[in-house]
Image (cartoon, rainbow, N blue to C red):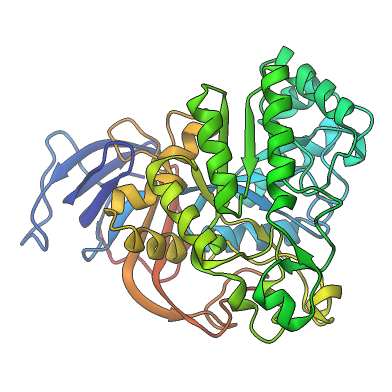
Length: 441
């Protein structure tokens, strides 16, 4: 199918270019881009290109599909095709075309057959590309090393413990050294298990007022210092997942200044909420790492803008209603993030005074670079036609009527957001449409 998408506001995060124009698509790739004024009187003619369909984008933003670099697929996604399809449909509704999946599925991704099964089921779903993180250790138990070389052959892009701690420092060093011998990156969370009390909140005024177990910033910085030092010793590429504090930003900045191959991410939730959003024990705000202070949030937001923190994630975790119905400290941690990722990223970009291209880069071009893909995250001739169309000014309420996927456990429940994906195209085919595309033959 040959498409000509006209009257779109084109945003290329990789180059920073923005402006109204038309995009020609054939054989799943962008074959031409032509600038034109907004609301042209007629569809522009592209020499040598005859479209099968012409689509007026009605001045909405056309940009590369989002690359979400950390999400957890909970439940029986390896056993039930429909469960995986529902999760990926929710991701598509959020404009996510490429999705990095943590290894703590059920069972964990510690065997090549499980990785291959997940990839095959995702291929059948035909919505988002899945990029699995392999288990660093067998069963994520932090003891015996997983077969990283075989897992890489099966399709894993890096290795992780998910949210499971690895207490044995020598075992962690040996795992990093083994990964480094194959030039395989490790993606790890920074949380000291002895300081990260279950069911806790940030060690601040809210935890004190509500009587919740306090989780100090040191729970993150102690673990982060350990990871950086071990990675430097092992010579491994280290990506630290979902930071939450100002002091961690300083540690990452120093490691980068020293030339260490270290990168980091932060969740969109931690850029837009604080400990105060726990309110009166809202269990949807029970997340790992915990929501921290306004000062931490501001430091994280600035760190993404200046590149100290490389990417923004959804940190999506589906948690059922029953598991969230317990008292805060006994509830299951995690928040849905697929469908709120774009509006929260837009809110962050606006707070930093960034252009649309700069705003989208941490969830597109910079995220693509993190996973070593030089094709994704670009709106350019020759790039794959993995595209989103969205209205950055559309207001909507987060509720059961607006969310498409199965996950409703978000602290944004019942609240207004601005900016919404209307379409997702993968390799020249629409895989999500919130409304029918107005086309002409």
